[in-house]
Every structure is written in C-alpha cells, then in structure tokens.
Length: 110
Image (cartoon, rainbow, N blue to C red; front, side, top):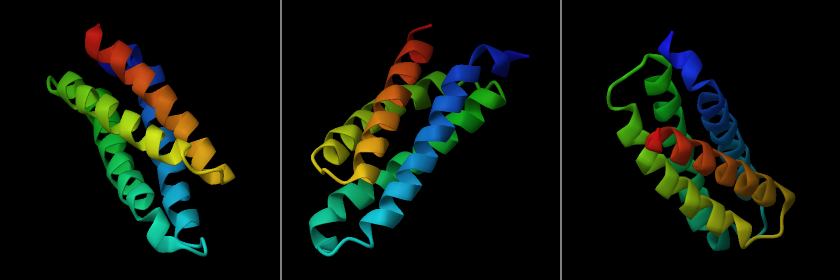
C-alpha cells in the first residue's frame, strides 16, 4: 500500500499535531496568555495542517506532496516561535515541529 511508504512522515505529522495541541492548551494556562497569542495561533494552524498531510498520505492522495511542502513551512514557523519560549511544552512542540518538517521535506522531495 502507498501509505506504508510514508509511514515515518505520517507518524511525525501525527506526533507534531498532538504536540501542537498540547502546547496550545498549555499556553492558554500561562499567566500572560496575550504574550503567547502567536504561539497558540501557530500551534492550532500547524496541528490542522499536519493532520491533513497525514490523512492525504494515508490515502495516497496525489496532492500529498503539495500539502507536505506547505507543512514544512508552517512547521518551521511554529518551531521558531515555540523555540523562543522556555516552557517545556513549547520546547517539546518545537522539537516535534522540527522533526515533522524534516520528514515532510524528505517526503516532498521523493
């Protein structure tokens, strides 16, 4: 099946989406939520796009590479923003985003 070829990328996308959801929820509990607004917004967008990319790869969509290219850009943006914050949830999210970007970059260039 086609999706098995992209298994590591699908897993990275799902892991990233979960990390982004957890980060957004944790950011909403921070004392200065307004300071975290960009982080939260990027977390939400990144989680949505990662889930779309995973679903498209799983069903072998011919547009999966295009979505993965967009996923690279958004994951890079999210990783950069989360990386600015020292909270553990932000650092874990940044790491998941970097891993997902690397996997999507490789998938899109295959």
